[in-house]
Length: 344
Image (cartoon, rainbow, N blue to C red; front, side, top):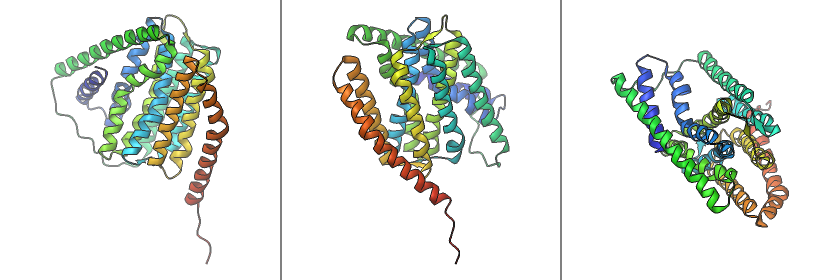
């Protein structure tokens, strides 16, 4: 229902807006981006109104971690992904800034309506930067083909159907997640970080994997980065703005989940910069990191001693080796890109 609702909403909205002869870029930046974030927004809003704020916040954080490590990892396994220079120069630094901004605003363990306004203003700024950059970039022929003209009433009905499916699916998912958390004795934070986060990321997963299979590697990467920006700035911002009371942020999320999100986002910069691509080996690395993250969350929640061993292994062995490898590849990429021929 989440995937079908998002698909109907995007397709019908694109057809409806096309009647107004709006530029394809604007459609992509607004309607399509909103469609990919609609499942997350639906679940977060319903969780907030039901006073399940740990699910509302945890699902956004968990979804952002899942999309980078799992969706990019699986897509790179299908076909090594190409990364555009704009992503490295603009979108990735902005995503790092958005992750740091959420971390800073949540430092006092709450997200207030004022924090929501700040996040939404940052999203508007991002869209403005994209629009300005597109206007100053060299004109290239667009591969966009307008959709066939259909009656606006039909498009409006499809939009309504998509919204109903999204709301219904969000309600079912939220109720099931709360029941599962209570029956298994798990915290709502853990359910939000795992089951809810993965469920709301299914449309992005389907889009990126399909794009990788079809060879549209730019879309596979851009969908993940753009979706995370909309989730962190748009979904969290709007949810904090309309919440009946300030959103509470779990101390565990501050101590572990948000630093992991910031670290994963920072990891993208050297990986993308070294060759402007994501190789299959790097895709396996992303998947392995998510497996370690999932094992830590599960073991920490259940009180297993594996959590402490994983932390020791990651801090003293895996992370130093990973940092050394990324430093080596980044320096090599920089020297290759700035290499000058010696004088004869």
